[in-house]
Amino acid sequence: MSKTARAYTNIALIKYWGKKNQTLKLPYTNSLSLTLDRFYTDTKACVINNDQDIIYLNQTLLDQTLLDQTQSQRIRNYLDTIRQMYSFNEHFQIDTVNHVPTSAGFASSASGFAALAAAINETKQLNLDKKQLSILARNGSGSASRSIYGGFVEWIAGSDNETSFAQPIETESEIDLTILSVVINKNVKKISSTVGMENSVKSSPFYPNWVTLVASEIKEIKQAIAKKDVQKIGEIAEHNAMSMHALTLSANPSFTYFEPETIKILQIIHELRQKGILAYATIDAGPNVKIICTKESLKQVQKYIEEQLSNVTCVVANIGSGIQYI
Ligand code: DP6
Image (cartoon, rainbow, N blue to C red; front, side):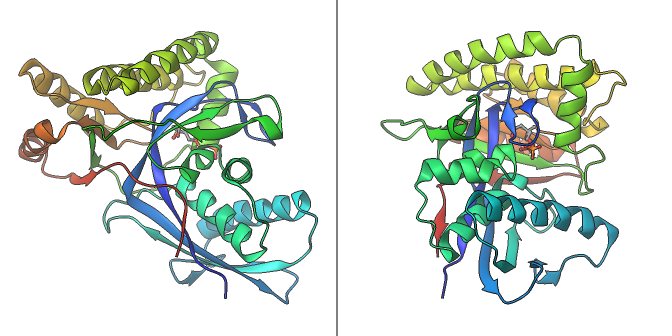
């Protein structure tokens, strides 16, 4: 019996936003993330005697609705890629369960494809090391390459399939950093990350500046991590996130992932900082805001957000671990 693979989501502090090779998912820049302990995906793969893969998501057979079909096609294509990469023909039954807080509603391709890569590695006994597993996960979704590891992780952009993989950033002792996830919108996003980044690369006049900016911010944030300087980490991460969202606003046609509540939370974070409370924002390809806090600032930040906004859900996440087999 093969084991279930568990992968946690990660939040990018320095974002991956743009591919130089769509098929291999090779990014233009390195990126750097933190793996979180609250949201994860459990996936089990079994070889079946069938000419198609059978995919269950949260105990429901996929392909029942149109939305399912897009999702399952992406998984089927990925399984085809794996079959090609490792030269075998078998098909699988995939059972995958997303563990996100009930109302949170952010399905994560990072934990999803990392868990799937690890589940196939397990059931086919491919014996991949973490680097190979990161490469395999990247072929499913770029950000999944980072969910192989716990803690702070850097994805090295590389120049081909073998040189583009994530690696952990060692920290000597614990760092006092907590993430408050503020969930605004439970709907599926209208513009996927894949499409959003492609449009930004193609049409934002600032894209070349982004590539230069990321190179320097990666260096700076690694220094801040080494010094365990949470304020500096927050400053750099917030600036990087705002710069990424500036690429969506400056794309042609322009688009944004922000909702009115997103802006409201950003304003609240500014107010909190004026009061001397440590809080910095980072935002992925959606309206939800993740707030970088310390243990000390967390309670005040959460209280303030919940007082000011009645229609949001707050979830506290700490630093999570890498791939597990259970
Ligand atoms: C904003 O990894 O979902 O979360 O490689 O096309 O599947 P694909 O994109 P994906 O993009 C993640 C974008 C981001 C930033 C990040 O996680 O680095």
